[in-house]
Length: 66
Image (tube, rainbow, N blue to C red; front, side, top):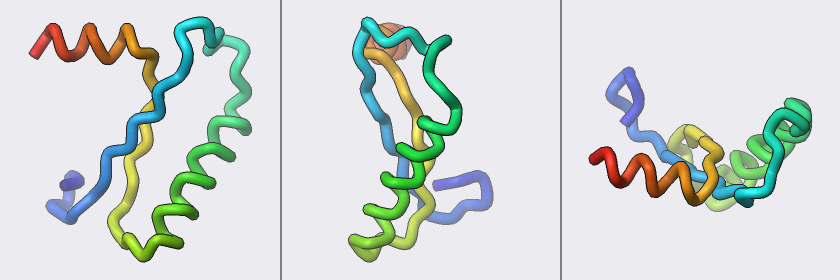
């Protein structure tokens, strides 16, 4: 659910450990997000996708904290 109580999706894009995020162009990130949203809508899913990017190690850290 989102902050308004409406159904939403959480999409996690797992990137490689070797990706230098300082060198990733924001326009490229937006293109990836748009492609994901377009595919979701094309599949008939109306919920808003909240799209996040993380490395596997970051996901493990989050899991350890829970």
